[in-house]
Length: 81
Image 1 (cartoon, rainbow, N blue to C red):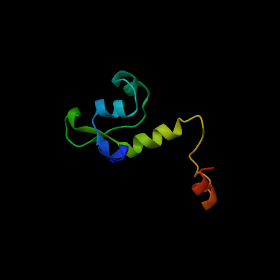
Image 2: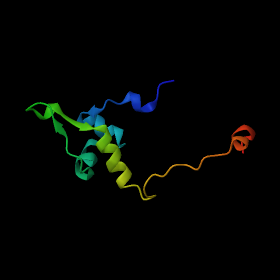
Image 3: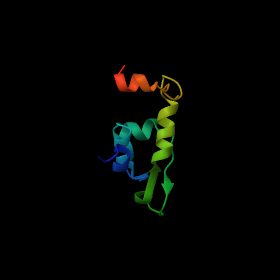
Image 4: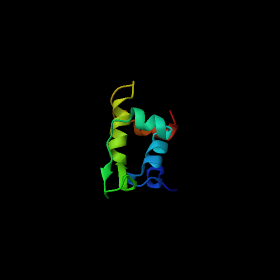
């Protein structure tokens, strides 16, 4: 099985960055503070780093920062509870 993150390249063009964030291109350009990396002089060479987009999305999460899930005991894993 392919991990979902493997579907997305590390550097995304504008339309893919918007899709990655589940936003329209217009909304993405309006609300996203992440600036693209310029690989060429043309805007067609601009790429948004997926790790920066992930950090931004985490920062706007109203649930707060990520935290590790508590580890379950071996008996809970075996018994499903």
